[in-house]
Amino acid sequence: MSNGTFDFNAFIQESKETLLNPKSYFSTMKTSGGMTEPLIKAVIYGAIGGAILFLWSLLRISPMAGGLFGGGIGIMILISYIIGAIIGLFIGAVILLVISSICKGSTDFEANVRVMAALMVMMPVNALLAFTGHFSFYFGVLISLVVGVYSIWLLYNALIESLKTKPETTKIVMYILIALLVIFSLVGLKTNRFMKDFNSQEFKEMMEKK
Image (tube, rainbow, N blue to C red; front, side):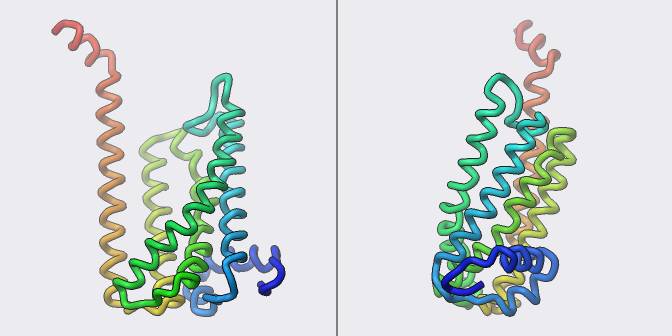
């Protein structure tokens, strides 16, 4: 994409390359050229992700769907996703910069912003697969875990290829992130099981007897 205009066709091609061939894409990705392009990419990814969640809410296969205000909630999801994408772009870039610094890579803020914008391609993917939790909480957690691991794989390639971090240190950091992801997933499962037990009829009857 050129500095003066935003090429949507190039954006689509770059998104495909990021998801399907991250090593090649991040090795040739431009890490300079201004903040406008990554900001537009973040807004588009946020809008697509929000639109998908809005659709799920209309179809009542979203955790926030249903009820009298289902459509209104869906609109709020769309708006919040776009706003969240803009805020997340810069907060994520700062976090990415810290990780890159730990791994002896680039600490140029613009480079980290542009890499973060590319990584946000996972926002629509997350939104697209969000419906799985409606049919089965455990299946939803599994899918979320798989998406999370794949996101870390994209991050690894971005750090190595675009930000030129040291592979050995980067691998250690990625293993730590995967371990944290698994721990949080297990905590989510435990919490869900506890809430089911807490809301069960047997538990309520037991508390009434006391």
